[in-house]
Amino acid sequence: MRYSTLLLLAILFSLFYSCKSSLNISILRPASVDIPKNVKKMVVLNNTLLRNKTSNAVVEGILTGEQLYGDKNASLACVNALVRGINNSKMYTATYRGEKEVLNFDNSVNWDAVKEICDKENAELLVSLDFFDTNSGLGAKVLGGVNQVAGTAHFSIYFPIEQLLISDFVVTDYKATGAASPSLHPLAVINDAVVKSELLVAVGETVGAKASSEIVPTWIWVNRMFYIGGGRELRFTKHLIRNGNWDMAEQKLMELTGSIKDRKVRKANYNLAMVKEAQGDLESAIKYAETAAFTFNDKHAAAYLPILKMRQNDEARLAHQLQPENK
Image (cartoon, rainbow, N blue to C red; front, top):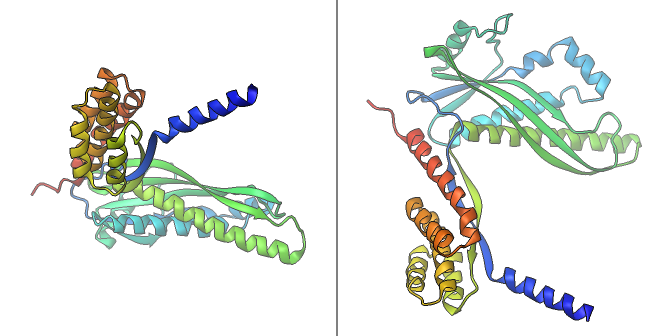
């Protein structure tokens, strides 16, 4: 009897989840930082190198067992990835300047230094990597097991024309190291140190790429659920949706909204919301999601609505960021 009950529950669970599917769609996410309209070029500094030159940094590396040049190489990978991400956006150009102190002894901004750097590079904006630190959980002795390399960076963005600190933000990202060798044999230790060095550079690149999405709009993939169970018509639209045939999928789903069965109408409205989002029509997507949620009590539509409304707010901000400078 117990076996039959478990089997029935398994079948019901399988049927429930077989009624839904998902796919990824790409969306353009706005930058977190609003860059002034007259900015065309940025200059990027790596001022973590100033910190790493100090004797304290060397002593810290020896005491903690960290690689003396691990964070340096990671920070260089970070700024290079940041410059690459900015240039790939086609909205601005960016160049790497190296290092230059832009703060006074009291940590106030030396605007003369900022302006001088920007003038030399013919740039309107200066981005400074002020701090970069990695924490891998691995010191001089390489331990066994799965470990994780974390990279944390602090950036400051200066606008010298108005002597304005536009933003300062922190970015953190991670890389799994996999299993390190538990052996303390010299060759094993050297091999693990090489792997660790490569991972530090890799985490620096991921942090830099993530930082660029703070400054420029970025295309990302998001996952969306849609209904496939509930009749032959919904199963047919599954293939249209998966192939990105949005117009035909919309046409077939619109036909289903005239069904006499509430279940079909509910699912058709939800799927229409997802299709309209994929088409870029967020206003219609919200309308269909509201119908599914409020008229037919669809819990998935109720959860989907805040996402769509957040995207609508993002679209307004994105339109402002992409709007060209007024002449």
